[in-house]
Length: 143
Image 1 (cartoon, helix red, strand yellow):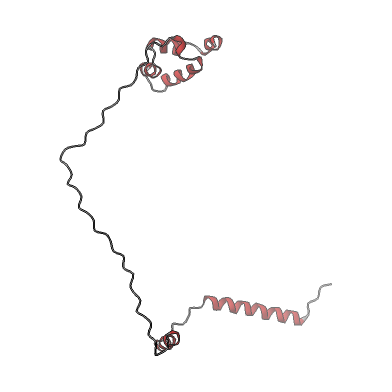
Image 2: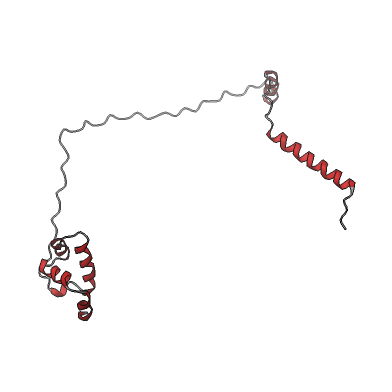
């Protein structure tokens, strides 16, 4: 059996009204101080009449002077010479392991020419053509 007592309902209503009023006061615009208020506030925080506060030095940051740049030369800078690729000579059929055959097929089928793949591995184009031309089942019996 739940029954409310009248005094509890009254005190709850007062608490709610007080909380609402406090919340409204938080968001009310604050009144601007008048010039008279500012003058009295300034004298309250100021030093006693006999003492004067030292004048505050302004913060000034000096920028160092910039030295003039050297005149740009009319000549273009020399471009670096491309380094020649090292060629591997003397590789045999055993030079390319069977584990690379799939990669070689992929390179040859996705944009590289057979000559480029041969240059990459340092073998003759015939070797690459032999690898690309073999079916996958022959490779599994070789390994």
